[in-house]
Length: 629
Image (cartoon, rainbow, N blue to C red; front, top):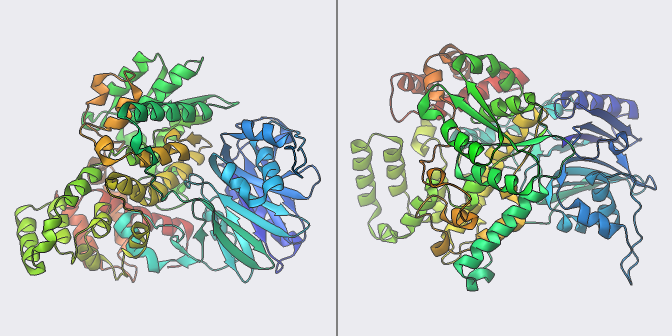
């Protein structure tokens, strides 16, 4: 787990490129405190910051070269099946022209490089892991950049007249001064509506994100993008399996996924909220590992936000070395500046991860497992039930639009809440179906509210495109919702936040629920067997009797800090300062945003803290990066 940088250009001298990449490496020092490496030739400079997880020897430092020195790699991530691939690459298959590769390290870095040398871009089809890497061919002068299937590890790039620059984070590119970058106003409506910008676009004009399951080839000033994997497929091959067989297979795949993610040469642990997902991982880890598992939980004095009692139950049941981290408003305020400054990319949700990651790292842990992905693939969110119920109400489209609009108006007036506002917006849709209804499920504001706040373009443009590519197969609506969640919220909020905030303190996070083989199988299970009559029934049944009833049947809380209380008290002056500054941008409607803030302070139930905080964060990020607006 590391940070990577690179700059390929014929417009800059070798010395200039080296100086730029060295500075980029410095900006990524938090991601890799264990080694700083730079390599250059006349055309390209590659940089690497290393966090040692596998093969702690100096021989595994990067940039790393092939035996013949033709290829050089910089790599960020973990390849979970590297041991199996290494055995294959050490021999020459009968009847083939492949030569065996002689390894000099025990690192997965060398396995990736050897696989690329043997198979070219097809090596990506063999990889099971989280990664972003770049390989340069010193003879053909060709650069190959790839990102993992689910988009766990990030890769940003800028491609223009001056060449190609890439990095694990967006700030090093911003600070490189190879261009005058500015805020991407074309996607501001999307950020305000969804607290994120959907890849490949970013909040910065001229900087893109390499999409999950894609690779880029660059040669002779030409960049070409290719897709090698798409999560957007729903197989029906498992329809002949019994429910018991399906549960057995899920247990087998999840256990294997956890087992593969426990390979480490450094101390590791697990985030434990006390919910079903994290509890399941701790239970499986305890079965597999011969060592006592270290678990970490955040608790609060505000009991309605604290899940510590449930985490303690699991920690006791599986005899873990448990760390409960009590967080007070004062503790949070002390850490807030560091958390905001560590934020590579603006987000309304990332500080949570920063707090628990820092506490985990301070306990001497370098790698931790997280339950991210469990809700998305096992129908853990309310949106699964809502859209499933909506599918049964196709008769709504038989009601004239004017009548539906009138009904929506009445609902909003009688139910003055976010739910009431969204029902009105739903009933105003010309055609109510999955494609039109899903974008409302993740929106922070309604279209009408957004149009009052900023001068905006269509905030649904990108999400509509994403949803249109999701296959909708009879009896697999829940899988379609899963894919929609994976392609929007998971990849563009949860995973980006997890990476930037954990790597800010040099902590590696691994997500067993995001093993692509597990996801592909669960997507194949039909709605009848997956519908959450009880919380995540399919996952719970697959675990057998591993989890106690008190965990299975508890009310879902999610990992949320007491923001509503803090924004009105301890963080009030900080928020007011940033809201006031944000109102001055030419794309804002000052009166409406100030009104939004006052309504929040006056306990208007339609203005939640999340409608305020991501605006505060965006302004802070703009000021901190000094980006042109």
